[in-house]
Length: 250
Image: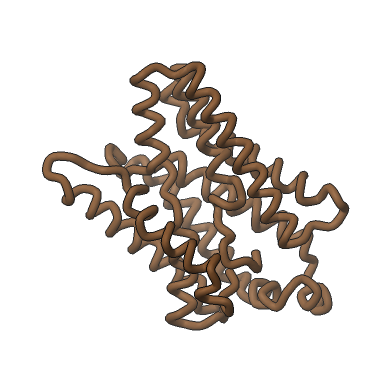
């Protein structure tokens, strides 16, 4: 998406995962949290695509606006469910999960995410020509023969699946998809042939170091990773919205 603030948070995918996980926890199906998060993310993606296409033509603006609406709606549903149906134990579980954590994650839990991330990385690494064309704007991409509707559906769906699998494993760790692409662009430029692998590597390193900080900052306790990513990501978001990098497009 040719927009500097586009990421799974903004597109409503994370909110969908939150709703699915919240329902699973409230209903006492804690073993189904991962599946609930996955289904919630897919449902949110479908809703975004339907709303964005209501005028017949999906655009970057309609996609972002639809994601914002779905994000607000799904978070409202989640908060309502927590308010009317949660006990103290469920609230603590939801709170910790929605902030993201790798605590308790085992090597066996990483098998599916590793496969999905590996396949997604290989696929997106071959799409740099399309990404570069889309960076030029909708009209320019259409002029170059890029079927934007097809690629929007394809990419958003794949990102939804990827996000759902990762969120189901470690909860919601926000702002990683916002910060690292901009950092990578500052290092290697805007050509997605170089940008995508560097952004992927920086994202992994960012999460690892956030996890390290969450484990060592308070002795004998582990804080949610999302606290640290939000402390960095929120000011970065304000910086982007305020026009600190007007030439940046993600």
